[in-house]
Length: 90
Image (cartoon, rainbow, N blue to C red; front, side, top):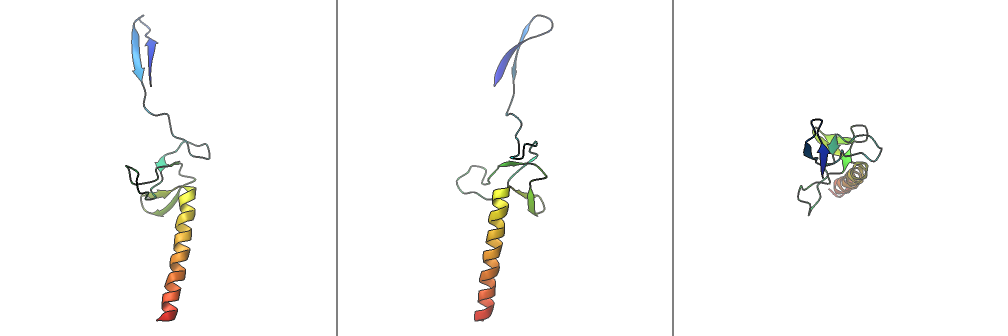
């Protein structure tokens, strides 16, 4: 977005800014993005803006939004159940 601004000396300037600051759903400034893998997105990840307080970090350098932190826990629970079933069969 660009704006025309009058300069102190009487001239004009065109000032352009990038994206507005991203906010976490909690309202705080987001300082990271969700790293959950998402097919079909150019970046390959969710990229939801999240703050450090709301982020779940399953591995160094990886951050998840609340939705994908729940999805990860559900996946882990299902994986544990599958592993236990395999142990019982073996």
